[in-house]
Amino acid sequence: MKTSYLWPTLLFSTFTGTAAAGGLAVGEQNAVSAGTGGAGAARDGDPGAAWHVPAALADDGGWRVGISLALARPSLEARATDGSWSTENESAWSTPPHIDASYAQGRWAAGISLGVPFGGGVQWPAMWPGATQSVRTQLMVLRAAPFAAWSFGKLRVSAGVHFDRGRLQIQRNLDFIDTQGDVRLDLAGNGMGVDAALYWQARRDLGVGLVYRGRSTLDFHGNANFTAPDAFASKTPDQTASTSMTMPDVVVLGAQYTRGAYAAVLDLEWSNWSLNRRTTVNFTNASTPQAVQENQWHDTVALRAGGEWTRDKLVVRGGGYYDPSPVPAAHLTPSSPDASRVGLTAGASYRIAPAWSADLFAERMWLLRRETTSTDTMSATYGGTAIVLGAGVRWTPAR
Picture 1 (cartoon, rainbow, N blue to C red):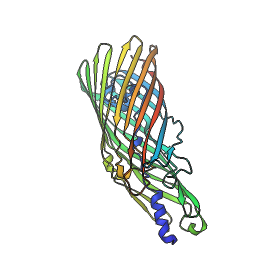
Picture 2 (cartoon, helix red, strand yellow):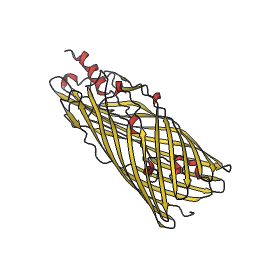
Picture 3 (cartoon, rainbow, N blue to C red):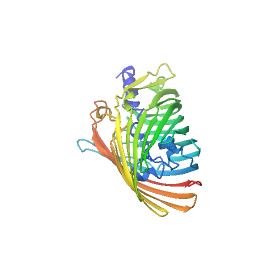
Picture 4 (cartoon, helix red, strand yellow):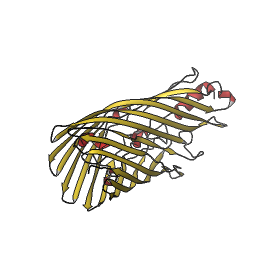
């Protein structure tokens, strides 16, 4: 077989699905809302509103600071549709942090949210059946989102910007017929977007929030390192590569209803994943061809809901969510084994001092098994579970 024919085939299989962020949206943004299925778009008075609904913080509530840390471990299985093999991933515990800080006085408020709205990945064994399509894919997007808010009475509004810093790492094996090689990409990029929110105190016991988080396009640049036999060395030198990934527009409509010691929260979250039509990877070496992958993702609507019960210094929470995958079965690959997610959550808070509260939560997630219909990858199904544990502390001296 001529190398001029084989090389483009290897390259396209190597970079299929590099922009696999669909199932990597992180719903656990603080330990309070994580206990109620991630719902929080109408929760006022909490430091986590700096992320969920900044407008709600324009309530003359003074300083609010919250720090949360989540420990997440997914367990994903790939299984041949004919039952001939199965492989489990080797993902370790990950620890995305989140910090919220704000100050409100009179009608105005200002603050910032720092966290990881998109992150995660998958790591397969080095010699599993799909190693030429994926061994490791890892994405982490850090976001800083400052904002300002103003109160018009029952209606409060906010506006802000966000700045993203992302890192994308990819590792795959290369099959050169009689020998093995590999390729490793380590790319970093920046992006920014705009945000806005409304909070309406419809009644004393009912709040409604509407939040918009704008898209941000991260332009990734970095190193592409190849291990290949001498016959391919001229086409696979170590070099730099670039690609781009767009985090979607997100609109969240939320409500919170309070009755005595009980409260219920509900969020509907629309994500504009359909803007991710294709991925293009460019290389600086002219002999290495450009790789283009069609993605054709679709928009999603997630449902998050929960409730809480308060007694003296103790708050107990529970909730759940359904978050569908934006990746069609025709583009389901080992580097993007995305699945619709169903989760159950529980949490609690305790006021340990007049200005201090401690928070805990736990989550069990199911990644609903699905089968790929792609003709460009091996015939397989993907599914699994994940455990998420988290803790946080809040400082609210004015409360």
